[in-house]
Length: 113
Length: 115
Image (cartoon, rainbow over all chains, first blue to last red; front, side, top):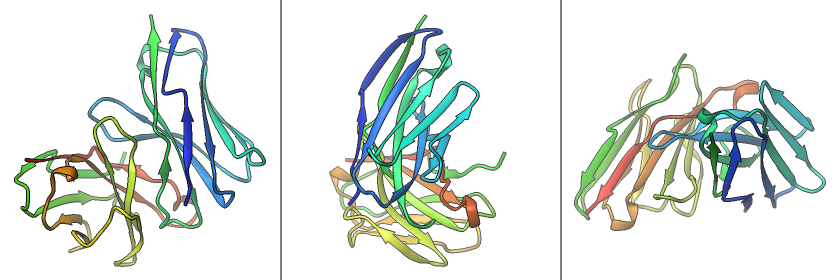
């Protein structure tokens, strides 16, 4: 089955700097890659997703890039703010709507004031 | 904005007891999922449900688990005989049809503690 590796496990950046979180996946059939933000005691909240027919997607300060050949994808957050502090999870899935997501282990992002 | 809701938010039970976790997916969604997250670990897929039947399940989803859509709005996860290792946060998610079918929206979760 699919295996998703995520790095780093913890990332501390100064407010205003950029943060990059990287994930790799094993199953070349995976074609959907969402990113979720989880705040303490809450459920994962979708922040951005990308499909395999696209190499990059941007939404304001957040961008995701996908390299299908290398089987890796990355989350980029620019101009980080204190409210960006949370755990971020990448995930991957194959096929249709009924497929479950395979998650990475998460990155605890800490924004230092 | 529509959202997935879950009840209860917390559940404490004795080992061996049955528990039912409830979810109300987003109203026009067609696909429903359960995931669990053991404290400090990643989110793990349990089962997906579509057209009133299980579509996919993971190795975690063994015979002690079952899912049901008893009416047009609720989606439930039953754990028949709870074990200590079932203690976790359980998340329900739903996704729509067509091009939106892959985008899964998660509820706030039910924290289950088995004593």
